[in-house]
Length: 67
Image (cartoon, rainbow, N blue to C red; front, top):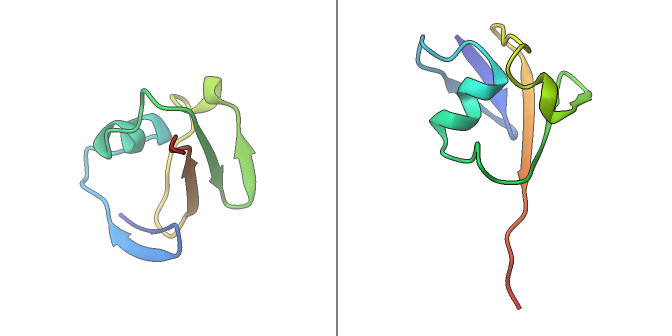
């Protein structure tokens, strides 16, 4: 499936079905993130059961420490 991820169209591997799968694929599943799908911000409890579809618009923001 092809989605718009953080402003860039990408082709996702077919095994990525949910937001949780996407976060694991990019190895950010254990970080504090904010995920928006098609304009709606998701709470982390919904990452597993939120299915992705072709042409979804996804924004992922994760926090990086520093000083």
